[in-house]
Each structure stands twice: as C-alpha cells, then as structure tokens.
Image (cartoon, rainbow, N blue to C red):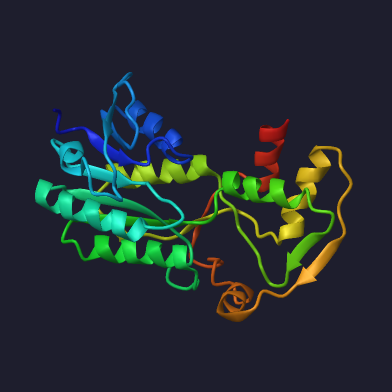
Length: 255
C-alpha cells in the first residue's frame, strides 16, 4: 500500500463528498473508511470498518501517515474517536486532522460534549494534530428549515442565532490543513452572516413562492437557552469567514 495514501473517515458524508475529490485533485491516493463495502475506483480505495465498534481500523490505517477524521453522528463520537486514536498511535500516524464544531467548549449539549471529548482525545494522543471547528453547514441548516417551514406558526427562539457556512469552503480549508504541517487548534471557520431562525426561513419560502408564516417568540429554558442567548454557538471575532451566503446556497440548491 502506498504511504502517500490519506485515510478519510466519514468520506461518504456531506463533507467527505467534497473533501475526497479535492484530495484526489491534489494528487493523493485516498482511502475511505466506511461501514458498508464499496468498490474502489478513480484512486479512491474503500475499506470496511466501524469506528464505534473499533472494527477494521488497524487494517484501514496500514500504510497511511495522515488521517482526516470527518466521521460523526448524534452520539458516540467520543468513543469512536478514542478507538481511532488508539489504533493511529500504534500504526504510527504522523498527522491526525479533525473537524469539530464551533462552541464545542461552550455549548452544554450532549452531542457537542462528544465533540469536545474527541478534541481532547486527539490533543492528548501524542500524535501531531490539527483541529478545525466549523459552524453549521448550509446543508444541515436546510434540513432544519425544510421541517420548520411546514409549521403553521414559525417558532422564533429568542437570542438564537446561527452563522451557517458552506460545506465546500470547509472542505477546501480542511484539505489545506491536511496537506500542511500539524497546527493544533486553528481559527474557527464560520459563514459570512448571522441569522435568526425566521431570517433563515424567509428566503427559503420566497424562493418556493410561498408566503411567510407568522412567528411565535419562544424562550429556550435552562443552561442551553442561556448559552445560545449569550452566543456560545458563535465565533463573532477571530474566526475565518466563508464567502458563500445562505441566500446564494439556496438560490443554487432550489433554483
């Protein structure tokens, strides 16, 4: 196996589908760890394994020096990352790159906590590493907006704002980081504009030719509500900003 091969976990997901072609365009062989078997083609080798179960990871790492860890889900990310880290340490990986989420150390949600625990597992691994925290992708924001736009009244949680970023821009930044030297925790990557939920829904409905719904102010209770009202899920200063706006994304996706 070629030592120039880069292992990508989550290579078939929203972000991975952008990352893998960019790595190939840069001249690198790519190996993708997937839970489901796929035929290898066009310089991309698919290997079967399961990070949550700790299965197939050592074989996937054989002959690779760089790992781009994109795999993630609603729960268990921390355990999956610990399995990857243990195998990568034994395998002699030289650079482990991780995609995390803006506010990983500030938002008191269980799935966000798994991202922070994953960051810590990587930072404490002894493997040279790079971690990028990104804002919510446009694609994920669209999934949320599609559901909310069907409601007769649009809930408007007070103080909740988002700064969605384009997955293509996140992918390009990750590839740049992967092909450079390990850099630790780099500046966050966010979208160019802030939106509350009604502001995300309005252009979606307008592009579909639908009238806007009335809004209902809602107060999110507890620690989570306080964190969102304080902007814990945002990086307003010190972040790198993508250029593609939510409106541009919608125009292309729905047009």
